Each structure stands twice: as C-alpha cells, then as structure tokens.
Length: 262
Image (cartoon, rainbow, N blue to C red; front, side, top):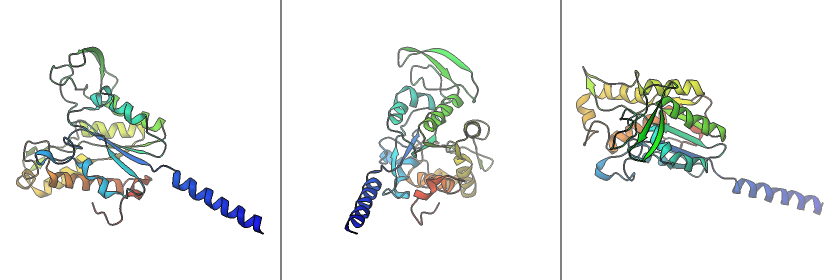
C-alpha cells in the first residue's frame, strides 16, 4: 500500500511539474503604425490597436507580444529581418495576428522608404535596386508576402489570423472609404487561399464610423487621416476582440478575459 501511495504521489508531482513547465502559448501581433505607433506608449497622442490588446487577454494563460512597427509594409517587415526573429521562437499552438496594407501602396524603390509591394495577390514580381539597402531585390505582390506569413506560421504549428487593414478617415457622401476593392479584399482573398482565419477589421470599423458620422470620427485623428488617438484605437481594439469572438473553431477566443466586451 505504501508503494502504491508513493507511486500515485510521484505521478501527481510529475504531472504538476509538466503542466507548470509547459510554456504558455504566445499571441504575436505584427503590423504597421496603426497597430503600434512609435514606442506603443501614446507619444503625440497617437496609438495603435495592438498596444491595447494585452489587457483584453488572460495573460496568466497566454503571452501577448506586439511586434508591429511603424512605417513597415508586408514586404519590409520581412526584409528588415523582423519576421525571421519571430520565426526563431514561434512554436506549435502560438497565434499570429497579422495586419498590413497601409504602406504597401508606397513606391517600390524610392529613396525615402522603398517599401511598396506590387498590387494584388498574384505571382507578379519586379527586379529592382533597393536604394535604402543598397542591394538588388525581387519585389513581389502584397498577396505573396501575406501568404508567406501564413505558410511560415502554419509550418511551425502556429495559427495565423489575418486582419484587413483599419480604414483611414476618408469620408465621401457620408460614408467612409472601405478597402473592399484593394487591400481589404486582397487580405480576405489570401485568408481564403491559405485557410487562415480572417477578421474583416476594415469593414467592422467602417460600419462603426458610418454610424458615428464624419465629425465624430474626426476626433479620433488629431494628426492626419491614418493614425488614431487612444479613443480611436480603443474602438479598433474592440473590433478586433469582436472579430476574435466570432471566429469559428478558433481557440484564441478562449484566452480573452471574461467580461471583455467588443
């Protein structure tokens, strides 16, 4: 009997030790300045929605890391080496929340940023000389780079979630301009192609803006038509949460704090 009790006790200790040592999943957030503006601490009254996500999750069960950075496109987030650094630690059961598009429409090879991508999701490419990096570079479509995020994540057993880019403060005839003819559409198409989860963040927020009206939405944008303040980014983060809650068969919603409302 003593041996049985000792065996059960040892097994219990081993199980506890395994569960204690098992690493938590990580939610990696990648994107541009609308996801993390500057240092992510609200400099110049500007915020990104990714900086507001950690308080919405139970961080005793999941780590939330916002790796977004201003000025990057889907292409330059990769060519800067930022994606490779995430891949070095990305593991099975982790999540990657992806939002790019605002900077992808920039020139491919200008001397200021050289960050643009070819429009669309096809296989087109262009050989350029990158004046910033001083190297020859093959530039692909927005869809190519977005597919790379998804396929690389899946190859490591992680779960990718694509978000269409948040809308800019561009109203016409009482309606905010949507991305359903360009980057919002292409983000959705890549998600369908690759089997990634998809949150139509552009449409969700645009619907909210339409209900609020142009004058009220102007209060969210103290500097320009792209970068929201804390109030605007809080709305954006809420729409991300709402989108996560509605994802079918995606366990990321289980890590949201109880009572967190969209």
